Image (cartoon, rainbow, N blue to C red; front, side, top):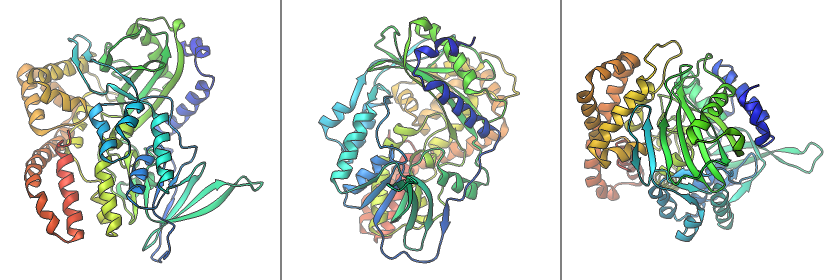
Length: 528
C-alpha cells in the first residue's frame, strides 16, 4: 500500500480526486497535448459606446489592480469564474513588500495589520553537508487571503466597481477603439447559463499561468507554448507537527534522486504548520507524476519535521506546477489587451510567482495603466512597455538550470547541494547587502559579480563542472543578460537624475519615458 493510501483518511476527502485530476493535466501538458483555442479575435470596426474603462479577467489577484484603478476614478469590471474569495492557505511575503497596499491606498495600517495572520523569525537556509544560515524578515509574514480579498472586494464595490461572479470568460474581440468580451453568466433560464457581452476600453488578463488568452498570445508570438522550465510543488498544512518558531526558506537534506533535487520550505500557520517540497524540472514526458512526488513528500516529511505520519491531521494538501519561459515577460500581440501577473510571466524561473510577484509590480502597473487610460495609449506598442525586458530576472535562468538535472544527465548526487552551499557561504561572507536581495528574488549586478568571483576563488573546479552541466548555449545566453543587467544598473542611476525633466514633455512622451525609467529601475533590481 502506498503512503498516500495509508494517510488519506487523515486528509480532506476531496484530495484523492484533486490529485488524480492534476496528474491527468500534468500528463497531457508534458506530452504537448494542450490544445490552443482561438479566444481572441480582432476587428477594424469601432465599438463606440463602452460599458467600462477596464475589464479584469480573473479576480483572485486581479482584485488588486481592479480596486486600485476603480479608486482612481476609472469604471472597472471584474470577471470571475467562481466566487471571489480568498483561499484558506496563507500567502507568505516580506513586510516591506506589503507596503505596496499602503502606497496604492488600498489598505489602511489597521487593515494591513489585521490581514497579517502569522509572523515568524528567523528563517533557515541550509543544504545537505553544509552549515545552517539564519536570516530575518524574509517571507516571514503570513497574510490571510480570506480577509484580504474580502476587504478589497468591498472597497471595489463601494467605489462603484462591477463584479461578475460565477461568470466564465469565453472569448474577446479587440476593436479599433475597445474590447468586447463574451462571457457565460448565471441565469434563471432552464439552461442555467446565458451569453453576455461586456465592452470596455482595455482588457486585463489576470487568469494566471494557464490563461487561454496568454496561451494564444504565446503561440502567436513564440510559436510554442511548452515551457522551458517547471517548478513542481507538493505540500500540506498539518496539525500535530511540533511547534517551531522559525521557518525554512530553502532547505535540502537529500541527494539527487529520480533526476530531481528536492528542496523544502516550512512556515508556521494559524492552523498548523505548512511544509512544501519542490523541485525544478522541465516538461519532459519522463518526469515524475504528482502521485510519485507526493509519495516522496510523505516518505521524507517525518524525517524533515521529526514526526510520525500517523500523528498528523492534514488541514490542506497542496500540489501544482509553475511554468516559466525564457522569453518573458509575454509581449501582447493585440491592441487593448494586456497580460498582468502570472499570465505575463513577470517572475523569475526560481519563484512561484503569484501573490509576491503581483504585489511587487502593483504600484508600477497601477501608475502605468492609469496613464495609458488617461491618454488613450492602448496600442500594443504602448502596452508592451508595461511588461518590459528585465535582465535581473533573465539572469536567474542559469541558477534554475544549475539547480535541475536533465532527464538523461549524469552528475554527482551531491552536486547541487554542494554548489548551493558554496554559493550561500560566499554570499554570507559578503554580507546582507548581497544575500538579502537574492533571497527575495532580486538580483543586482554588483552583488552578483562579487558572488561569482568569490565562488571562483573558493572552488574553481566546481565552476568548471557547472559550466559543463548547463552547456555553452545557456552560458552564452546568460552572459548576454548579465551584460544587460550591468547596462540597466548604469542607466538606472542616470534615469533617477533625469526623471524630473520628463514632466516638461508631452503626455505620450512622458508615458514612454516613465515606462523606460521603470524598466531600468526594476530590471536592475533597484526596487529592492
